[in-house]
Image (cartoon, rainbow, N blue to C red; front, side, top):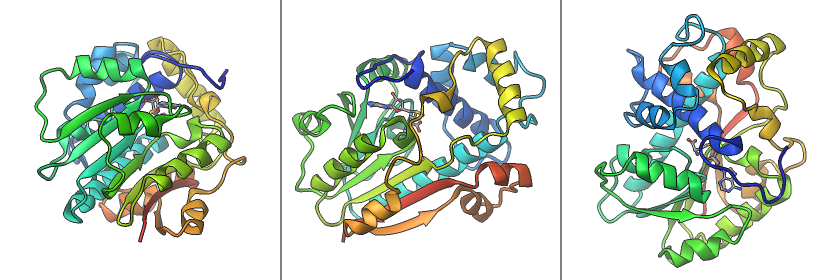
Length: 296
Ligand code: SAM
């Protein structure tokens, strides 16, 4: 059950969802036809050791690679990773040197992407989540000035961001990946208000959002629950989400605030990258939004 001021570490509640996402990045990275490489994902999942490591190693479940269990979720995670990696490639080329990753979780882009010289990258998340990542990746080389801002995104995070050296006079590339459904609709609007207030012309944002209530079929849900129970994982992502209905569509919000919006979706991204999307997976991805916007 969520509350307005709940908090978590990497093994529990919303924090644990970051591990599931990293496990899916690790699984994609291990494929012969991987669409991206995240060499830190498996390391992070192993370091948490809260059950996802067992799934990753195939110690529970029958045939994890072919299992339809994580079909739509894996496919969505692959699509959004590719989409956002390309987004950051483009912002670098556009001359943006200030990056803010909201709800960074176990995102290792600070370490694994090439950043233009002089780029400052802020990662925001709950204090214990960031603490865990810093200790698990201690000593890994960085080509970016990475700064942690440990704060709850329902609190006054713009103040904390400024306090860590964020410069509101510079164009910024924002990322809200795997975040919006963990915020109530009103908090999402406040988040967007804050982003817009800190964004000079030329700033950009990328985000994703599942728009359905239940994205998985009952059979797949049941199978997934069984596997997670075997692995000792006790989270139900969809019960941590706030309603999809009671919130503004990000496309509308940014368009109405004068940003130029470009929307996409996981099936389009995967197809463009030569990844086959079987019909049941396609069905599970039906309502998932990938979006970028630029403030002219
Ligand atoms: N963006 C990362 C990725 O895609 O790998 C992590 C996604 S994970 C599904 C959700 C993340 O959002 C977690 O790391 C969690 O701690 C963070 N998060 C959710 N609500 C938050 C809040 N109110 N304040 C700070 N972090 C939050």
